[in-house]
Length: 312
Image (cartoon, rainbow, N blue to C red; front, side, top):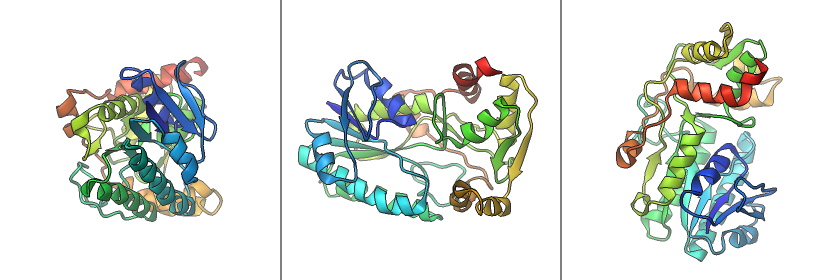
């Protein structure tokens, strides 16, 4: 049995699709799980409750933690450490291997080009400190031989059929498709990597089913030579066959918007990712698995074909 905790999000869905290459026994766990594949086993659980996590993990060989929480610092500080502890305890109890899907908030803001698995861990944001705390919880268990686990990290992501969790989809794809100006946080003059979610799902499944991948941190396959913000917008608009219009939102404007829009208030501390080049390096993964990430132009076309083409 291979179990996905937090199966309803963008990564959980892509992972569930990819896991069919390795097993017919897939369990999807969330508050209200829905099938991705016909044979999926569904299990409803609240990951904040240790007993429910323990039951959800029972009989699992591999457990993937891909859950996401509301993008609020207070929520993260309350939920993430508790959930990760529950999952670690359950995996240890059932002797299951753990694959933790992570982001790159833990890294030092002065070393974002390139961002490798060896980039210094020194989170500049409060949300990054939460991510560092939970990653360290897992790494400590690995270090002392208490848990077989790995951490899979991706950059900001984009892809088809993502609900409200991709900044690129929400502020660029959707706006342009409606004839509105695209919005870009910070300056649109800097390079910014995005991981294509189908690649992330395939790669996470591959890591979970590769024995010698455990015990390490892996960057999931992401195309090299990323576009600048302005190039992202221009290329998306070109594929849509429309004029590229956009407005950039520097930090001071995000602060002002935060007075009226809660999500913008939460984004202020993350602007550092948009006021310098943000170039994600996945060469370690690509080299080991001979995996070529989806190109940005192909990814853009896929998103538009699957979600927006019919309305243009």
